[in-house]
Length: 267
Ligand code: NAP
Image 1 (cartoon, rainbow, N blue to C red):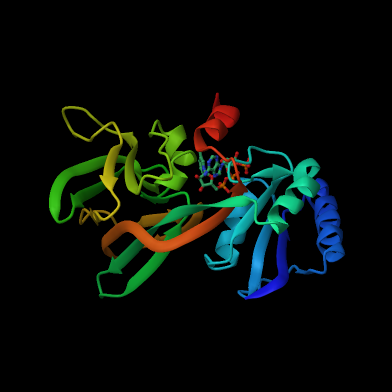
Image 2 (image 1 turned 45 degrees about the vertical axis):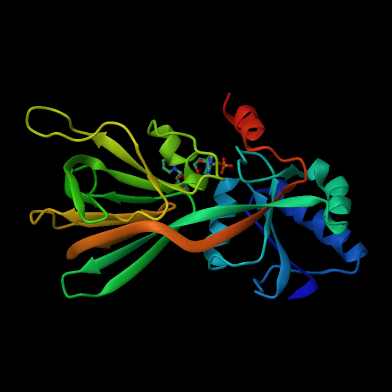
């Protein structure tokens, strides 16, 4: 690791680009090099923007070990820890080691096609399985090889605890403290009638469980969305979803408290 090398990524907002200039100058004052090209040897990745910019940087960098610091320039900024106005004071804390690291679990979906090929999709917020456009999808759902139900609806979402406040929350899923190692399965518009019986609430599973999704034979088109990145398949045999071994490290203030953050952003 090169302790004096910092990566900085920003979205296209003018305020973010201005913030980038300021952050670069401040780090240069302390003898750090700042680059906008990802280096796995950097000691820190700074992400300027909102949660969307942070998620994009995590994907573009390939879910690295290097810790991230989010600087919020508008939007919600749930993953972001500071604003630009707070940056100079926080920089002194960072340089003196006065901060905490929040580990964020990720979720992995392995798609196994009918010819036996495997494709992996990792999400920080979630993995979503849906059918084509707005058509209903029929999915067998197993938890550790036990068939739980045949689901019918728009689809299912699987979130590690760190993604519980994103799309999962909008679907009525539970907000989960990221210190709990869990995998949450949340239905998207489940059909619960005399014709179909689908669960209508989220299921909370321990992180070592595997969810196996088996599309019914009639399902030709299955789409996997990991943090909004879409991949379409026409020949899915099954999809295994579980909490991944990959963890993202997020820099937080020394007195960071998850529930205070929830209160300030949601209530
Ligand atoms: P996006 O515009 O990047 O994000 C949509 C909203 O979700 C933004 O306000 C974003 O915050 C916020 N957000 C993202 N991750 C969050 C988290 N972990 N906790 C709390 N809020 C969070 O949308 P996108 O590019 O389509 O997809 C990225 C993410 O958006 C997906 O991973 C999914 O979770 C979420 N999404 C939500 C819905 C929904 O709620 N109905 C639908 C589709 C996708 P910022 O404003 O700070 O960027």
